Structure formats: C-alpha cells, structure tokens
Length: 298
Image 1 (cartoon, one colour):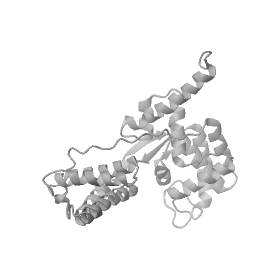
Image 2: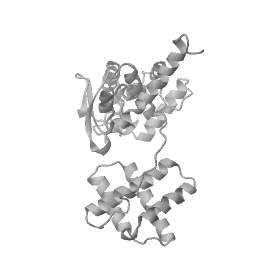
Image 3: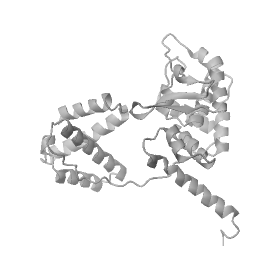
Image 4: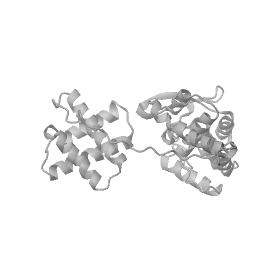
C-alpha cells in the first residue's frame, strides 16, 4: 500500500497544491487504516479493500473513542484516495462509492469584541521596530481576515497600500485580492518605513513580516505573539490568529456586509463554510432582543 499512498500524497502536493498539514493528516489516516487492515488480515493492498472493511475500521475508531471529526477525516482520506486510484486506472472499483461521511457538530467560533480588538492592538505598542511590526500584524489580521499562513507568506510585491489591497495565496494555491482598511494601511506604512528596514538581514527575502533575524516569520511565532499580546492586554480569552479572522467576518456581517462578499474575502470555496457566521450573528441578535424588547424577559 505504501507506494500507492506515496503517489497519492505527491498528487495532493503537486497537482492539488494542498498544504503540508493536509498532506500529513491524510497520510496519517491512510497509514492507520493500512496498519489496521494488515493486523486484522483484511487487506494487504488497496485492491483488496472492501466496503465492509472500511465500515469496520471506522466503527473500530468510534469504539476507541475517536471524535466524529477525526472519523470524518479518515473517511474523506479513504474516499479521495480510492477516487484517485480509480481515475488513474490503478484500481477498477471504488469501495467507498456508497460510503457515508459522519456528520460533525459545528461549533460557533470564538470572537473578540471591537473593544477587545482595540485593546489587543494597543498592547502591541509602537516604539521599537518589533512593536511596530507586531501592531501591523494585528491590524492586518483583523482588517483583512487573513489566515496565519497567508500572513506569513505575504510578500511586498503583492501589497498595494495606495489602492488598499493585498494579494494573498490561500488554500489550494488560489490567489485572491483582499481590501486593507485605513488603520492597517497606516500601521503597515509605518512598519515599512520604520520597522522592517531595521529587521532586514543578509538572507532577507520578499516577505512583508520579518523575524528579529530578518527571516520569514513562522505560523507558530504568530500564535505565540498573539498570546503574549493578549496577556499584556488583560484579555482572558485564548487569542489566536483564527480568532481575529472570525472577528473580521463577524463584525463585517454585523455591519451589514453581504455573505457572498465575506466568502470572497475569506477565500472560502463553499458558502456553507461562511454561513457559520450567520449563527454567530444570530446569537448576538438574541442577546439584543432579550436586553431591549419589553416582553423578552416575561
């Protein structure tokens, strides 16, 4: 099974342009199934896998306490693998053809209020080059709703402060233009003038945001940075990059933005992914109704 798995993962990386994390997660699911199938003597190669074996594997994971989301990842990994093998004529049949994917309960994303975002931005300061950089990072994450990987990979040639846009490369290597608001534009202008030049080193590339050594910032460093700023701001929430992305979308919706526009700015391929924010907004509507309607508390 290993050779075909390797071929499939290479396809995900080169032809589909999917992230390293997605590749690792998919490989882990496939390798776990392969080990289970071998241990149970159910299959030694992918051509021997039956629908019953897949069902038994997913049932085994469920009995073992795996979450519905994890089981769904396994099911999806197997389904796209077999579709790939059939399309490439490596296999004649797809044992996942009638495989159902477990439904996963969708949790409402945590967000920051507008005053909390302001406190986070203020906590970044703005005197030293690193403080100027940190403020620009928070401003851009909130103003444009970027994923952390998009922020770290953002390049100078893709930033147009005059027009107020940034071009980012999202999931599946897809590019999109995202507006940059005036607050973020000002913070970025100051960083490019008084922050970034002080961080440039011999091996500096074209990335906008640089580490203290002049290198590209990592996703992990952005997570650490936001945690530090949240503590400095006195916020009790576990602030992370995706929370600012959630806040960006939620505040846009509350301000009256169309859901399709928000979908475009977030880079969601499916509108159903964006619709979670309508539930967040509904939660706020209920709160306002209870607070202000004369008969809501009766």
